[in-house]
Image 1 (cartoon, rainbow, N blue to C red):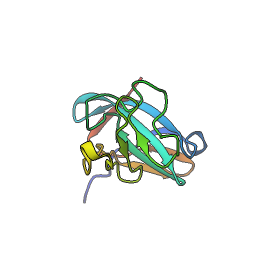
Image 2: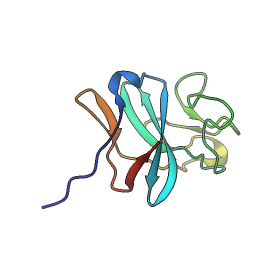
Image 3: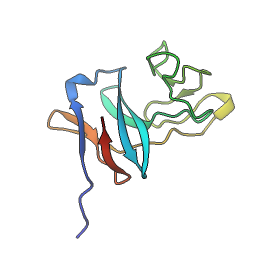
Image 4: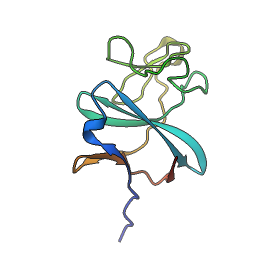
Length: 123
């Protein structure tokens, strides 16, 4: 019998609006990391908050992770853009590289993380 994946609740579903993000500090593969939860087209996604171009948070210069069109995630430092559903870069400089996805769940009006690589959520 397989062990259930640990679940770490983050917020009520209504707190994560379409085109918005929430940041949470986690212990991921033994390291302190920041995770971005985003909602795009009514679905929640989660990624380690680190651009593939340079190891900087996507929101390092502006408190936003979606571009002006609302169709892509965008690093505020160099403008690298990503497809929200997959974390795949569509910018020429990093084309095809992906943000590090974190398993997310949404049920019973709650959004959270459910990934074996997470050992804790930090304050």
